[in-house]
Image (tube, rainbow, N blue to C red; front, side):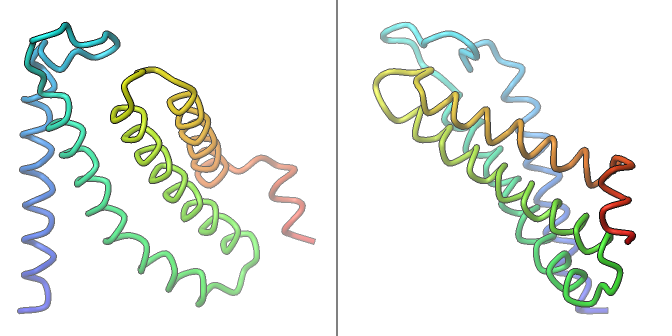
Length: 143
């Protein structure tokens, strides 16, 4: 019974962070898609930090489970699908890292953001292949 309590607390913390993030993102002073005017306050660093915390909590909770499943899996197709999920998680982490770098340098919307969006696109493609694998992909592993 005691083993489940830390997981319940983690889920509760993650849920509360998501609610706080949803509230913060509804404010216009996040300045999404525009540069913040000089002298204005911005909630964007706070909302980005909370989003990154939510991602880290999810990553810490899912990666050990996926790694265990990959090592136990005997079917090559399922093993490849699980590896795609792990790689998709890593690419989203790289997106957050590059996005943070883009926010820290004086020139916003730089080449770093483009690189980050490429990481994000690749992670979405890997998730797509993991959830709905193509017939060519399936036939490659079912030989």
